[in-house]
Image 1 (cartoon, rainbow, N blue to C red):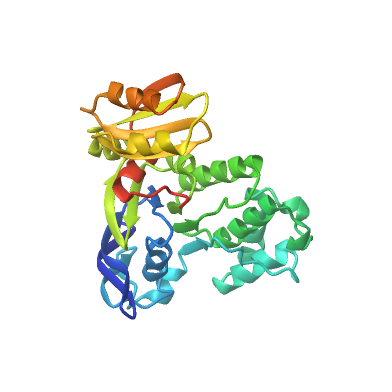
Image 2: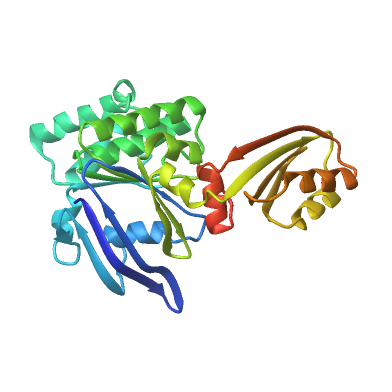
Length: 309
């Protein structure tokens, strides 16, 4: 077992940021950690890698207690932070060298590891450039190179694709799959549900400092099998239509994007009542699509919030 967390509690004054959190991660997994802003994801990550002290609970990494073996454990952990951890006064190669030395690499091992990390992230040809000359996607890749230079067994990636173009995002996602294939266990947080669905075999959803659900995407979907999703397209929508839908018995949530409305409702609900309500409020329906709940719908149902809120 790579990660074992039991009854983890982290407080800031009267505020409980992590509330009796339990989690296990096995060797070779990519586990997605999802939660709305303020759910406690970053605090949880900082707690399990020893960045912040915890009030109570047990954290074991590689079967070692983080309180007793912190320095030894950290040698085999790589962290890709959401905020770029780069030095513009250094070249890309010097950035990776700096982090390699922090992890105790020296001599030929350090030299070879710098080459491997920059080659893996497709930055070797730009190794002598300052990060300030890099695009957003290249900076993200350099961030990853710094985190993997010491070939860690456990990699924690906190929003590694924020603010980059689709091509760079796809490159990073494929790189993560390759890192996993060659032996790294990965904890992955993201605000992009499609990334989690693409990468992660198991997902943990956090809210208010707790794990409110855990399992494969199929298992999580089964937890809300009593719900269905109605996607309705109108010629034009208005406030009265949305307000009217919310009053229909069985409706759990309504979201609107232009003239498209998505409704989460109980499976036993009569969709005709919703359609009639829309017509009564002046709506003209052009398309209706019914579907089972996907991961994003599961997240909304369990937390009451959208992932990007």
